[in-house]
Length: 312
Image (cartoon, rainbow, N blue to C red; front, side, top):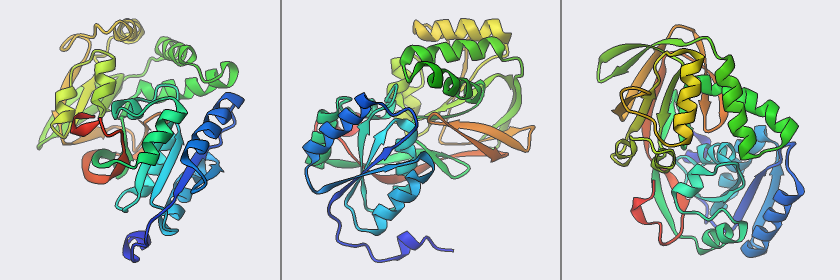
């Protein structure tokens, strides 16, 4: 069946719809940031507060209603939901970064302060970008299986108690690493060749900025239009804790702490029929095998004029 959005005539596009993830943890500081951004965007911008499950449909409705720009106000999970809805449309994506790390926005030079980000959106300079997808689901920065989805589950608990802080996010990593005892048995297939691994983590990256932030190799794989896939060795919980420390001090070692695979298409064969997959900080249960591929020219994103084509 054809996509009803893609099949209908494209309307004359104007106006800005801002979609804010109205999660339970939204605080007065975040609300103030959004208010300041809306003042910059002016009266042509419409603000929609929606629950996480309604973000994608609200973005699709903006496409149908003829908005020229749809803005994701939130973290990378919110941006991912909006971006997925805009895939294949002629709407531009604007970003108001309100997350913990904001790797996607920082990678494109988008300011983290609300007024600065809003000024970029108002200027309207855009460029087309490629995205990664796993089993058809788009992701912005990374997708992974293994210990990282467990980290996200623990992080939700920590955030509810201590708030959405970077130190809380780091603490959830340490707690999960200490408790993790079940590595995965996987086969990774690239260009018809399969390799077997016993590993706690397979991490497919699409953000060169994120890799460079942590001092990791693989940015060239991404700039060449593919994925940087990291496979961690099975070294038990102490090995995971050691890797966490090395990651924090930017001293991860290729060939010892991880193996790197560069590819623009790969398949991960897993033992379980259903596998929990983390995409940009959100968790999804997917049927195996897990097929990773690049989606070329997925949509246009509004970036600073100085970002140029080197942003990743």
